[in-house]
Length: 159
Image (cartoon, rainbow, N blue to C red; front, side, top):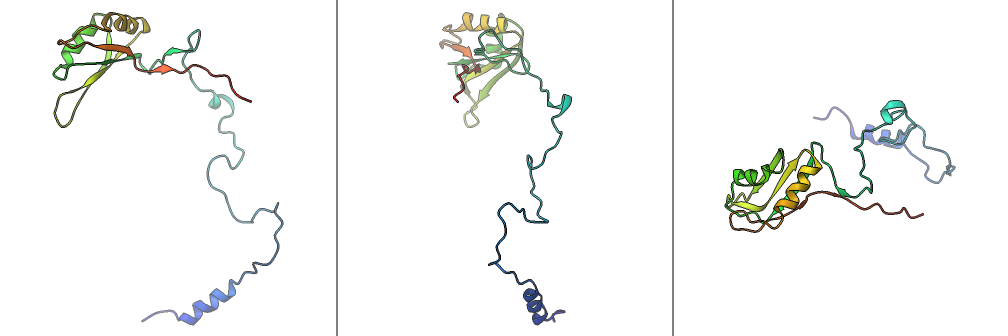
């Protein structure tokens, strides 16, 4: 039933006999073995213009709110569970043009989870919304408004 014979395989195994007692110098690399992955060889992947990446301009002190791709994001907590997106939008639209608004819902109940993310194009608009709406009531519930993402304070590098 088999096309090969078990003893021919045994003979092939005997031909691959290796002497493990033989000493190999430590600085010699094994021949024929290629290491895979990045950083194993010198390459010019980041040479020239390819190594220059875009960055956002920094503020004076390097701390404060972090700018997202399209603008500045604030977080509104204390949103009433029965609030609609239009209620939040109308309350915050007077401070500037809202680029994005996320009002997350609980999948099980369908009610608002109690917070919202609002994105403004400029830092001034977002700051005005924080100052104007923090502590105010929306649907008889007090809101807490602050920056959603902040830049960490720069620490001095240890040597």
